Amino acid sequence: MIQRYEYVKRAAKESELNSWQRVYTNRNLKLDTVTHMGFDMDHTLAVYHEKLEELAFKLSAKQLVKKYGYDKKILDFEYEYGGVIRGLVVDKVRGNIIKLDTYKYVEIAYHGDKRLTRDERKVVYAKPGESYRPDGDEYRYLDTLFCLPEAYLFLKMVSFIDETEGPREDYSSLAVDIRKSIDTIHRDGSLKKEISLNLNSYINKSKQLAKTLHHFIQGGKKLFLLTNSEYYFTDLVLTHLLTDELTEYSRWQDYFEIIVVSSRKPGFFLKDTEMESIKVDENGVKIPDDVAYKVYRGGYYSKIEELIGSNGENIIYFGDHTFGDILKSKQTCGWRTAMIIEELEKELKVIESHKEKNQKLSRMRGELYDLQEELHLYEEKIHNLRDRKIDCFDDLTKDELEKMDAKITESQDILSQLEVQLSETVWRIKSLEEELLQDYNPKWGCLFKSSRRKSRLGDQVEDFACVYTSSITNFYHYPTTKYFRISRDLMAHERYDSHSY
Ligand SMILES: [Mg+2]
Image (tube, rainbow, N blue to C red):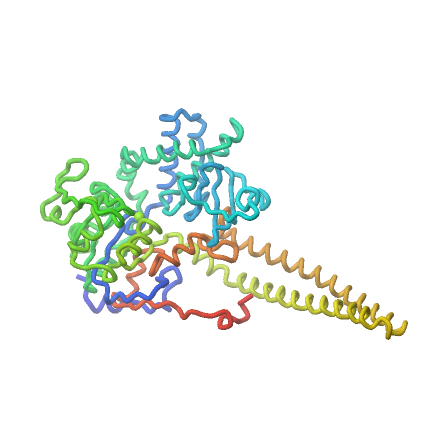
């Protein structure tokens, strides 16, 4: 049995943790006042190996050939990890995948494998006088890691169609076929069957998960599971991850007071639906009586609040889906939210590795700022000398005029040199910025940033999640009474320092 003193000892000081082990706060959260903790399963409790993306990609391509008659050559497509990232948007009609910033400006766009130039992007997405709003059925938002294989298959297929048949006016029928193919492999169980046969290959197991849940329970929290997965699959995955991990819990079900499967989030937070108690799983296998009493299918959030006898801010929900898990639980029920963003670990490691280069970048931006200042001074000087020459023309001697001309010429020469230096500095900054972006993702750059603004995803994380972190196991390092506080809001003048360029 893990003793209480051990529990206190392992709660580290935040300053001793690596950046990717920390929990980040958007809105103040007192864990002490939280009585119940809800958990999504897929990509929250269960961390899948990247190989799962490739499996879904390959199985969907097979469906496209078998069911919709696409060319067998597509079975040879290679899956590229990082070929698409979370937060992107599929423009189904134009056959493009785009990255948006917080103002919905399209920063990067690919048509198949081909990156659109700035001018090409402008023609499609930034028509004069129109503000671009990628909403509606024409677009698909990649809000979870499960969306990536589908989007990458779309990207590859658009290139393939362009090469073999020539460009289409509209690629939405392709998007529909791919969607149906993905649905099929999820519905007919072929994807899950493959996972179940190779659990160790597809699911990253960590002993820390059981310890983290135990840590919460020891802190007096009651846990519940709320997943869109079916019972049989949930049982398979969580048996693998939790059963027999700690002596206090012989089965994974022992960690949870309530287990809700096939919950149909975001519908679970939106529509009052029957919450059905189940005794057998989807394959007709009986659920043991001492577990079945707490297992439900479908339902509505208020039913779960009734069952656990708690509501609103006393509940925190851990999930990975910006819309289905985080936004709706926060908006509709007022639950507190913790978002799990696996990719954050890699992004933070890149940030750490960039420390020196970022300092260099900051210095160069400072130089650029100084150059611009100097340039404006000389522009002003030339302007004033010319004005004086015109205004005082009648009073000036030939000698004075010649002296003024010499001063103007001298200032113009300096101005030209400054212009050259300015261009060189801008170019050095751009090159270094691009070099840094390569380390995040060569095609799409940083997940949370779009040039110097926030990406759409970065904006959503900040807006929707009370706290966020790369793994649920990071909470193991924090006491269950932790007060997560936001950093002090700063105004522009307070942010002023040498790195503020
Ligand atoms: Mg999930």
